[in-house]
Image: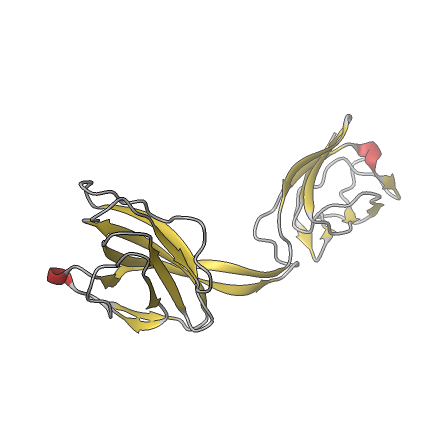
Length: 226
């Protein structure tokens, strides 16, 4: 094959692939469009603490048996401020302190109590934090359920999630592929393409073009021909 560098065109797809003599191999997949939540880390702040000597927030008593209590997350609450109103979820560190009985705590965005636990505190165990991510209700709150006994709860916020629209033209991460020369219908020949993409068109530093009869995701970098 001769060595002019070339311009390529390809159709965007949802997965990244590697092509070789043995055919097509799946190497990864990504959501290429649509609304997706993005996490913003913050300096941890205390949203709630029911211990009498350290009281923070609106709840001044331990969670009781079968109790569901609503905690407001967005806005300024407890020692936290500025959690945006469009947050759709929050990242928490949660600590259960001095449970009177073996129990579990569930964190959820409201509605029916889920059949799942976020913490499983037991009497006599030291306070141990657990990471919890919880979706928020439309008003920016979440609910906490305690199964049985009484237990003090400490809730710290470490970050929040917001939705954003992902644009197909600007992929978050490029995939590199190696492609056999005979996978292409040549209108001019080439041996190597090492640059990236512009709106789905594979670009090199030279002229010419190759028709591409295979689908590649936008953002793929053709590493080399073999």
